Length: 414
RNA sequence: GCGGGUGUAGCUCAGUUGGUUAGAGCGCCAGAUUGUGAUUCUGGAUGUCGCCGGUUCAAAUCCGGUCACUCGCCCCA
Image 1 (cartoon, rainbow, N blue to C red):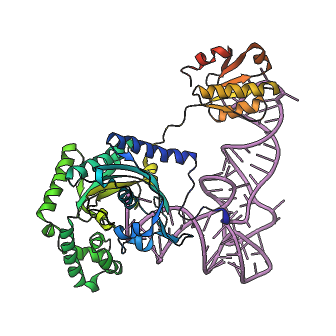
Image 2 (image 1 turned 45 degrees about the vertical axis):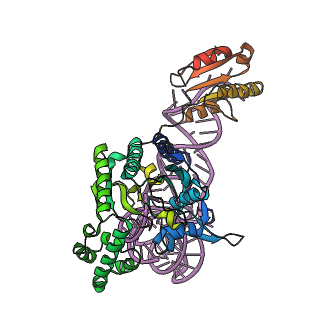
Image 3 (image 1 turned 180 degrees about the vertical axis):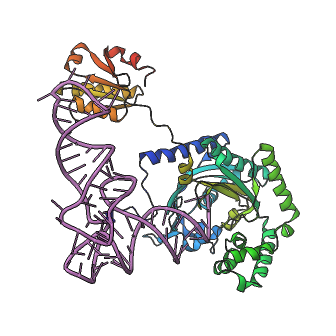
C-alpha cells in the first residue's frame, strides 16, 4: 500500500469530485466570457526565471516552494507555482502587447511545495483572470466585479467577505517599506523570530503577524497613509467608489499584503469563514510592475486567482448527468440487436447503459443501481415482434413498445 | 520548515488492565428467483490492525522511528 500512495499533497479526482471541479471551472468560464475574457492555456512548466524574477527571489514561493529541476537538456525548469507570470510571458512571446487591452481567463494545475493541509495541496488548481493594459481604476473594478460574479454564481459569495487594501504605487511602497524597516530594526530584540526573518524578505508581512508581542509593536508602527502619494490615494478612492456603485461590499484591511513582489495598488481577497486557516478563496490585485520586470515594456495590469479545490468544497452538490436508460438483452440472439439499439439511442442524445454480463435479474439490479429511469428489455420474443419491453423503473410498470415508437415514448421521460 | 491530533475490511467505526481464530453496520458477491430491479430472507468473501524496528512467553494495544492524513503556525488560492 505504501508504494501505491499518491505523492504527498496530490490527490486523485474521482468522478464525484471531478464533477465539482468542473462545475467551478465551467461556471467561471461562462462568467468570464460575459466579461469579454478569452481563455488562455500556457504551459505547465516554464524556464525557472519566468517565475523567479517577477515573483521575487526572496518570496516564500520562489525561495522554498517551487518544483524546480533540470531537464535532460540541462535547462532550468520550474512547474508553475501560479499562472500570472506565465500569462505575462505568453503575452510578450506572442507580441500581444500591440493589441491591448488583453483579457484572459485560465484554469489549470499549479504546484507548490508546501505542507499539505485541508484546502492546501502541492498540486492544486486555480481559475484566474488577467486584464493587461489599462492603468485605470475601472479595470480593477471590473476584475473584482467579475470575481464577485463568479463567486455569486457558484453560490459562495454570501459566505465570503471581500477585504481590500492598497499597496500604493512603487515610490510610495518603497518609501513606506524603508520606514517600516527602520522602525522594526530599531526594535529588533522585541520582534518575534519569524518577524525578524520577515524583516529582510517582506517587512509588510510583519503588520499581519499573529504574535502578541509583534502586535503591540505593530500598533505603534508608522501607518501607510502618510506615505501614500496623492495619485495612489486618488486611484484607490476611485476603485472604492466603483465598488460602491456596483453594490459590492468590502472591508478595508490595511494589513492585507501580497507575498509576491509584482503587486502594487489594489490588493484584495475574498475570504470565507468556512474553511479555517485556508479561507482565501479568490485573491489578487494590480501588478503594474510585472511586464517590465520580465523584460517587456512597462504595462499595467490587474488580475486574480481563485482556488478550485477550496471553491469546490464550498459549492452545493452539482446536479449529475441525466438518469440513464438501461438496455437489457436476454439471450445470445438479442446481444447484437441490443448493441445496435444502444448505439442508436446514444446517437439520439440519450444516456444509455448496456450491461456486459449476467442474466436478466442481474442486469435489472444493475439498472436499479445506476438509477436508470427506464429499462428496455430486448429478448427473442421482442425481437420477433420488432419491439422492446419498456419498463418504467420508478412506476414499476411495463408495456411493450414497438421500436419505431420508442423515441416518442422516451420523450419527456429521460 | 515548526507544534498538536489521527491511522483497524471498499466506506464509517468498535476492540476492556497487552492474552486463544480481530468485530459491527453499510457496501460487495452468491442463492431463494436460470425473462424482470428496489423490500425481505439465507449464505459468503475481503484485513500485512499504515510501514519498519524494539520491549514481552504473548503486541491492533506499550516504546522508538517513519509515511500519510488532519488542526494550528507559516504561506497563500
